[in-house]
Length: 336
View 1 (tube, one colour):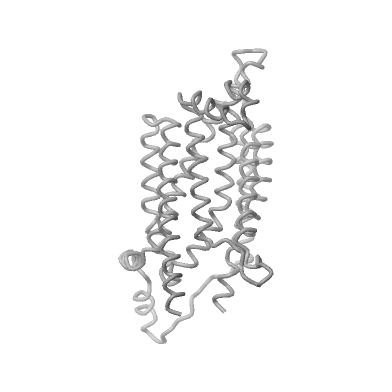
View 2 (cartoon, one colour):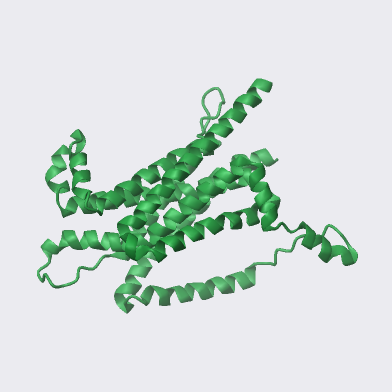
């Protein structure tokens, strides 16, 4: 039944995104090789072949997804047009259920933060790499290359780790000796994931700005890291903290996709799911475009700061969603 399907959604999404991450790891390595042999256009040239293969496979193996008609005769077209939800219908659906608004807002804010991050991590990492490895260069005027393909593969490995963690913690097969489920609810998992993502992005933002020395000083005051004070106080410390923060954020990205997929399936009505998702895509795209139109004024640090703020608000939305679901659970338990 539907309950059984919903119980296995998290595991299914986790496995699907784990497979995506494995493919992306390989793609990153291939892109690095292509860039080394053909220059900056190499990865794009390589992607053309895969796009052609994908198009051929889709044309040969995919069938047209045609919905079954509920009426007959000449009323078919009219019935289909009437049953097709509009943006106005989507707004009504969102207003009718605060859980849909919260899930959609979490999606818009996280994905906006992610897209801003995607276009800003290369200059951030390149600057930190150049600053650290400049002391090892025999020719000070020579440019220090950043292995973007390798870094991307590491990011995707972190995504794989994140999707695997999601599958493990939310698995419906996790039960104790009494047969009670020990799985973490998707709502609780979302709050933790978003909070960690905001912390990671905030740390990355601070590590590339003028406040980096204060951040590293605070880190070295911790007993565990006190022995690394000499290392963390230099360029190597900035690079290490930056990369650790970005890796942690990418792990959260790996957790995010199966999480949001499960929440959408749970709260978005099937009849309006696509149009509701398109509705929440409007503020997402507006935020990303606004940041990049202002990138000269914001800089990399300012753009990542916007991502941090978006993730913090998304965490608050996740907290509110969890509260609503817990309250509904208490009311349901009391009525029984």
